[in-house]
Amino acid sequence: LGNFSFFFYPNPFRSSASIQYSLAKKTNVQILLYNITGKVISLLTDEIQLPGSHQVDINSNKPDLASGTYFLKFMADDVNIMKPILKF
Picture (spheres, rainbow, N blue to C red):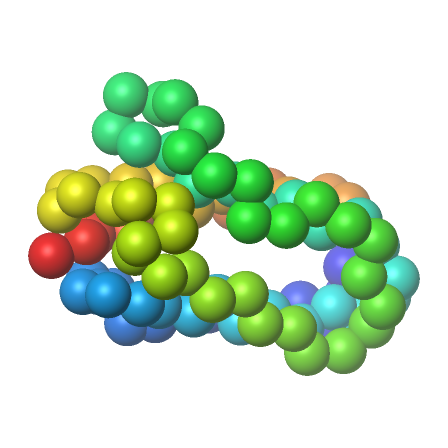
């Protein structure tokens, strides 16, 4: 993906958090949220996106997230990132 960046903040979070990323080229982006057992809780995005900066917000009420550890998976072209996140 060339000049690619990916940030999740704040981590840990209480009620909301943001995923920010930049794409160097048009590509399909898929972001999934998993619980600690590996079950997909939410498909946050699955679409072809244009180059540039993008943001996806997580509101802990949608999906309904209890306190605990979750995993955020970001996939785009040859980039595959799995990041642990903590909800208070």
